[in-house]
Length: 435
Image (cartoon, helix red, strand yellow):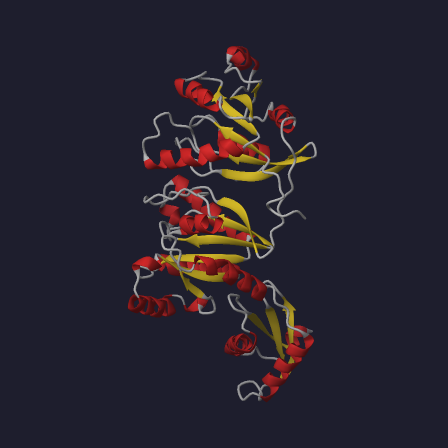
């Protein structure tokens, strides 16, 4: 498998003014719901990208934020900065316009800016879902080499669009990550800043306002010969069912991201006391049984004594994650940033850890001679699975054993074999249940 540096940055970039259907077409082409869509202008802010294969060619399809002619507010300026870099790297530009409203001054302004781009340009006239609309839109042109009419609503023309794309793009290979990790936490705790710091580029928007990140953002990096997939997610609030519609969709995407990773970076603002919301997020991580690293952000604002107090508060607020390593970090000063990925790798290794027969035999002998379990009618002890490490302790009795014995056995496993950053599950079973 080639390294990331050897992979060709082959991409097709969707651009256009707000609400012309870029994210809808993005989802249609991928045949899944990845980009958040709504009638609200400027829904997409970050660059949302995914690999797509068509006619034997694999390339990156990238959705971008809507083009604003003025771009005066911070979100628009930051989004345009990301867009400009993507334009310079793309092989194909898909300029979407609304076939029902026709060309606007913003469409023409964007076309003028695209003239200096070396990529192959295709004008994509969207919302053409009837023959009458096709006749009306026939005269729409921006002087591009190719023009095609499509409908994101019913999918017509999208196959022809992909044929045009692959005719002007080189194939790339899908990265094969050794580890997948996601930043998860409240809004404005610094997830995107750390995401960018690890990638050493402005991949996610970072603004002082809450809920800057809406779509989850994926990217890859290499370290120590390993390929790692990182996911930046939208901030969560405890009662996201009371949040605005867009925020609900973002929260759902954030929680869905946990299904495709093995390590969760639980990101907490270290400069303020933990909240019920932080505790709720921690509980969600324990329920999905992922490996975890707790990142205490804004370390540049917290002195040594304050850090000790913050650690004690975390002991009280998050006892369910006592096994997760904690790291003070700052995207501003760089403190701790270079330790994030090594901790993630250690947590991932623990999550996949399989004890050897010798290690299991030694632990079984320990259980039989220990005062806590030695008097119990022990029958068997075995590791039944990994991801996370799961064990079964069987007793020769008919009544259900106390759950505290399983918790104690898990704590002893951690003392002897560490399992840094990974939950451990010890299931209790009786010989009656084992039959």
